[in-house]
Amino acid sequence: MTVQRHRPTKSINSASMKWKVPLYVGIPPARRHGHAAFILHSHLYVFGGKNEEQDFNDLKVMKLINPSERQPVMKEILSELGLQGVSHSFTPTKVPNVRYDLSEPAPSNQPRTTAAGVQVFAHRDFSMVRDQAMKMIQTAFSLLDQEFQKLDREKLELFKSAAALQKDKEAQEAQRRRQQEELKEMLERHRSQNEAWLRARAEENDRERRELYRLREEVLQDQERLKEEQISIQKRSEHLLSIMQQFKGM
Image (tube, rainbow, N blue to C red; front, side, top):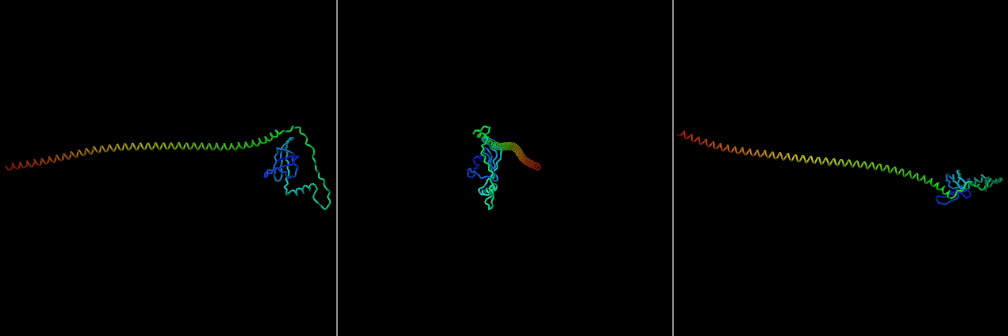
């Protein structure tokens, strides 16, 4: 928005990106730059700004006129000036109180600002906007950094949990292997002891069986000898009996 005293007030059309002179009712503000201007409810508000002579701290309000409302507004203005249209009765012409301000503004004692000053002011506005944008960016990056720190903490906790779980798993695996080794050693020892005991029992059984076989052989031999002795005794008895019978026959 550009506001000047000797030049018409212009506004830019955001749709066509062209400057245009709006129709308005009100006192236009003095020529200035670095001001704030906005349109609200068909009213143009101009606040602050400065020119080569002074800084402004005022607020100017102008009512904008749509082309369709031009005739009613002009009738209202003519009514205020006493020109109410054609009438059959005679009405005196009312002379409007029009002021023609032809005086030049008094020169200011302050030195005129150069283009560098204007650039400094524009740079000051840009610096303020830049500082605000940088503050917002820093805030966003601070939040992002906090989120990344939170994520790093969570990743660290997850890494610690995973490490603890892996350590626990390794400890359980080591305990399982140790138990398997102990069980294997126990089974091997039990197998060795059992085999040794079985071998000892087998050897002892063999010795006992051999002894029994020997004793049986001895018993059989004794029985055979006794049988032979009995037969021999029987023969002797029969021989003696025959001899005795021979003696009796004599």
